[in-house]
Image (tube, rainbow, N blue to C red):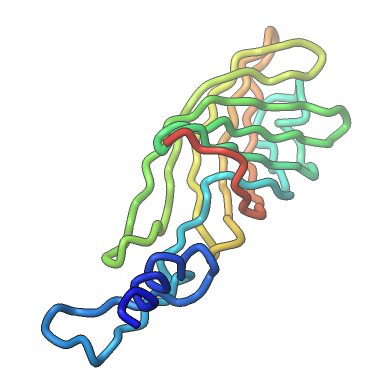
Amino acid sequence: MRWFALFLVAMGPLWGLPSIAQSEESEEVPVVVDAEENERSSGSYIGIGGNIGLSGGQTALSEGAFTLVNSTQIFEYLSIRSSTVFGDDITSAIALTGQYAIPNGQGRTIATPFVGGGVSIADDVAPLISAGVDVPLGKDFTLTNRLNVSFGDDETDVGVLVGVGYNFSLFSLF
């Protein structure tokens, strides 16, 4: 019977069942730990949002517009974040960002600030700086807020993006 209990403890997280942990002092009273309670969001998401243009006028980053957002976590501290802004024209912003997850007392992530650089693609390709914060809204959704600054030939376009994404696990090397 003891081997069966050990089997359940080992396989419980794989089946999505609560894990059972026993202390060495008392084997009669099992402690149930909810597997979902210990799960964290994956760091990768895809979603929708809105862009608020602050300055410029060369790309859609400088306009109020509908936006598709994406984040793909590569390593714990590194992600590729992209957004496509649908204004008078279409502008895509792609940035390689460094990030740091800020945990609360129980080890759950409460916010993940990030900063990085990349390119914005509209009529031409221009350098881009992107910074912001992701806030998990439970296990399935993430709220994102980004500042995108694109350095075009004529103007610097600045836009603030606010969106919500659905979390997924594509891959994570570490």
